[in-house]
Image (cartoon, rainbow, N blue to C red; front, top):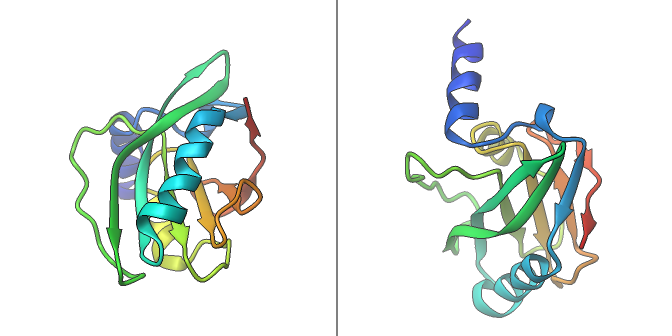
Length: 142
């Protein structure tokens, strides 16, 4: 019962859960901003940001970033603003592995329905999407 209550609470705070959409659309300019942020502004530090977007006709449309944060320690902890209205998150992996780690899955479970990981060398081919449980999701860029 406690997990269901927390899930419902976070779904209310974080705008969207993965049951509300069938497709994920990442805007081309948002992808460009993600790659630029990871490659030129944050590397070699890991960064994390929340994703801005909305669901329309069962399609999750991701427009950009909210609250980008960085830290040189890959196990950093962040305190999120309480009402963010985020649809998910993005995390960079400077060491190149594009799979969620256990502590990231715990973060995913609290921050929306879709989560991206981008890894070095930070190109459009170095990004993958995951659901809250760490299962890969397909997305397209428009």
